[in-house]
Length: 227
Image 1 (cartoon, rainbow, N blue to C red):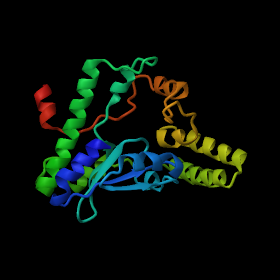
Image 2: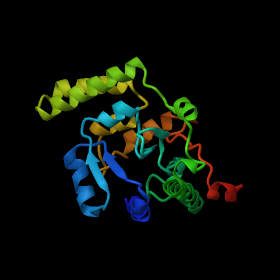
Image 3: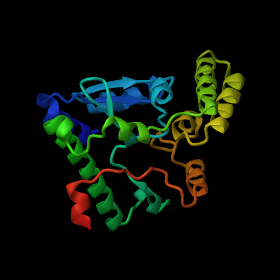
C-alpha cells in the first residue's frame, strides 16, 4: 500500500484517480485497510464481481482506464514478478539479487503510471484500441460458470450452509483453475492470515515453468537500463 499512497500523492493533481479493490471478505480485508489509512479509494469486493467483469485471476492486478472510460492497458500484474519463487520457504528470505530485480520491475511499472498521468494519451505506455483489444483475455464459458458457482457458494457460506458452499466453491475452482483469487477464499491461512502455506506452494510448484505472474509488456527506463 505505501507505493500506491505515494503514487496517489504524486498524481492526484494531474487527474489520476487510484482505486484499490480487495477481492476478499470484509472481515479479512478491512483490518489491513484501516491499519494503513490510505488517502485513495479502497473498496472490498466480497463476491469478486470485478474479477468476473475483467477476467482478473490474481492479486495484484491493475488496469488503466482513461477519462472516456476506455481501457488503455488491460489487466496485468501491477509491477510484481515471480521472484518470490526463489524464497527460502523456512526462513522466507529472498536472495538480494532477486529482491533488487523485483524492486526494479515495480519501480518501472509505477514510473510508467506516472508518465501516463503526466502525458495522457501521448504516453508511450498507452495502447490504442486495436492493441488493447488484442491483449484482453476474454473469459471462456466455463469461467463464467465458475463465477456463478463461486458467488452462490460465498452466499451460502454466509448463510451457514457450509457443506453446500464448499462444494460449489470447489467446483468453481475446478472450472477455473487459473484463478488464484478464487482459491484463496477458502484456502488455509498461515500465521500472517495469508494463504501462503504448503497448499499454496504445492500449487505454485505444479505450475512448472509456467508463470505465476504473467510478465508485463511495458518498456520503461529501468528496463532499458538493465539491457
